[in-house]
Image (cartoon, rainbow, N blue to C red):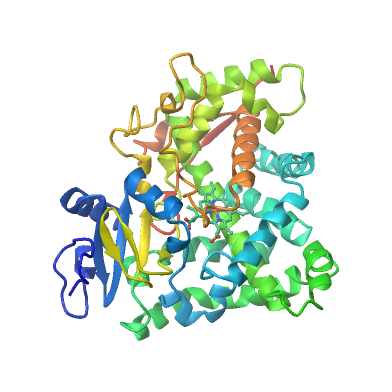
Length: 455
Ligand code: HEM
């Protein structure tokens, strides 16, 4: 039975709750169907666990921004925690409290001190792009965006990059992509107590790999010789009795940032380049703007974005259509609260449905399809509508936004300047349907790459 004044939702079955209402492959369409039936706030039972879904800008802002602390928790009883207790020790899945606060501050400081907002991060990204370009020129671009994003964050975390053929890194990136597909499925949303044995089996298969790479993180990531984080931050704190840091936590923290910084940016680029290939007119218009603004310069810098309104609009539209983290990361209420007139008890899981905002009717000139005009005003200037929320909102909002935006800009501009990306004639009709997971990924596709004449 739903608690008093709880958001409405479909009838529940014993044991299953509403699991039978959700498709195992891609529940996003089911969530949309339920939104149309019950409105922008509704509830579901995942097994025995109640969950509230928030859709649309208004509901999400009211909860995550206006009632920031009330909605800043993370559920601690999902199957991931059962399998891998250390998972809540990082940043992403840590519950609201002093440890999360210290780690989040630490992460923001790490990114800032290792170059975000300074030229050094741009230089790292551009240097990594030379490897990506070399790969493209020799036609071995498989997984190139994952490799590039992984190496950019690895340089911050470990002070080093990995060769694209490095076995350890290939395995880690493979585990990231596989786990990202499992972790937000309906089965994975259910509490640990309901069907724990099924989850244990399912997750052990995929998380066995993760176990290996926790060890790798300890040896690569926390090795004082290569890891600047250890020297600069961990050692000075080791004598502070109030600090929540330890070497184990640092390896979880590195894993979190590495995962968050790899599978997100790369999937956005994969989707973006799919649309650029199949919309050659949009690609050419970007190239014309890039050629004009970069004339006489050997490389792009992040500041150039202010002179490239069309490219900016295209990159934001890439993010909107890619809908890379469709259900955000799940939140939890930290106290009894209210939203949109409904009562939500403390400890309820809350899902901010970012997907619903990125295609919300009334918020976008063109909610469907690929239209950079969503981010341009009548004068052709770049504008960012309130509903552009791919990084979520409030205190748990993505802390890598600055790095992600810099990567998306520099990678897109540098590659479009050098190459023309063509949908191969024999590739048939493009399939834009994404593969569901914590992150959405386009189905694998071929791209034809031609060197452009430099202007
Ligand atoms: C296009 C790229 C990216 C997208 C779309 C994205 C999106 C998101 C979203 C939706 C969340 C959940 C926010 C919430 O719970 O309300 C999140 C959290 C997070 N992201 Fe990102 N992200 C991206 C890139 C990155 C990068 C490059 C990093 C690493 C530097 C990163 C690190 C994190 C971390 C650590 C969190 C957890 C924050 C917390 O719980 O306090 N993300 N991201």
